[in-house]
Image (cartoon, rainbow, N blue to C red; front, side, top):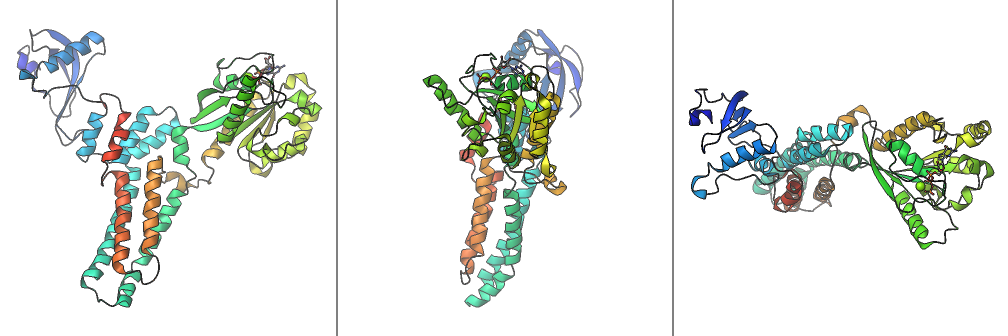
Length: 465
Ligand SMILES: Nc1nc2c(ncn2[C@@H]2O[C@H](COP(=O)(O)OP(=O)(O)OP(=O)(O)O)[C@@H](O)[C@H]2O)c(=O)[nH]1
Ligand SMILES: [Mg+2]
């Protein structure tokens, strides 16, 4: 800009070096801003094309002035200078081979990341972890296919000779299939990290469910009142629990006696939320548990209570302890003589089997026992994330983060299985299946016809990325 305006004799910025420059309008030579200017010649730029970055001040007047100055460079209105569409930079990077589709998706996830776990996963994917996995598999398939085709082209016409030739390739295809099966059996961890774990707070009316939500959210997100039946609708709050993304739902108190149709609908929604949740937090009033009144109305609350309404605390605890998807909170500890209950909890085996304690006696009013309960909740959430037992190798392996990947890997695996199918299948059929398998992997990375997914993937990007 300076070199054209004649305002200074500052040299054209050196490639990839930040330079401090004054920006002037080409119309009237008006000063617009003092900015950092970066000159990034292609192909070593984000898009692969020649790029200039102007790091201006963010005020509306500066941005508008600089934008207008740039658009004014489009002499004759040939639209060679225009504002970028949302996601256009990334789309160009993809079109120029700077990124594959999984890396693009990783970037989108990084931009949208709310928690440390999401950031970690997105960075890994943006860095090419999934691309390397899928491209590696595709390379291996290419080799297998080349061998198969060589036999078809030059081999004997005898079927058993064909078979013998393909038998040499079978172990490689089988090994690849095994690897894919392991990749698919990730318990949906990557998808859960992207979307967040669903936690439903359920229990009878007035037990303190909304107080529980507010405690977790550290703000009065839901209305709390002494009247039973306060919460009618599901109240959802997005939380970061120790770096893990969590979507917590507070629900209407469940009771059989509800007559009011609005309350009945609320209860229906509460059960639905419990059914969708990966972790259920069952909140009971400790005083009622002592009186054993709480259980009668709880049928259908959590997955573990669906079939048999439990009669007593021991039954509930056994059910909760046997189900990694639940946590029992006995609230209003301040209103009961707690020692007896604590003893009962211990006898009923809460915390057995090396897992975190399944039941907690707390007072959400006084805060007693709350810290321990929060630690237990976090431990439970971590279990949900790692439910397939993440050994170190697993933790390092890139995970499937979108249903799209899963569909194509499954189809790829089907084709591989078919290629090793019945004896006497014929080499040309086997080769065709290998080709299908390779195409399916290519669809994930974007090496093969991607038109239909491009819109979906780039739609969520903001302008300027
Ligand atoms: N004493 C005592 N009262 C509590 C405690 N936790 C909550 N409460 C009170 O219990 C009442 C009900 O609390 P909520 O959080 O509204 O209960 P809820 O389960 O959401 O009730 P519904 O929405 O009606 O199903 C309120 O008056 C709270 O202040 C506690 O630990 N001790
Ligand atoms: Mg409530």
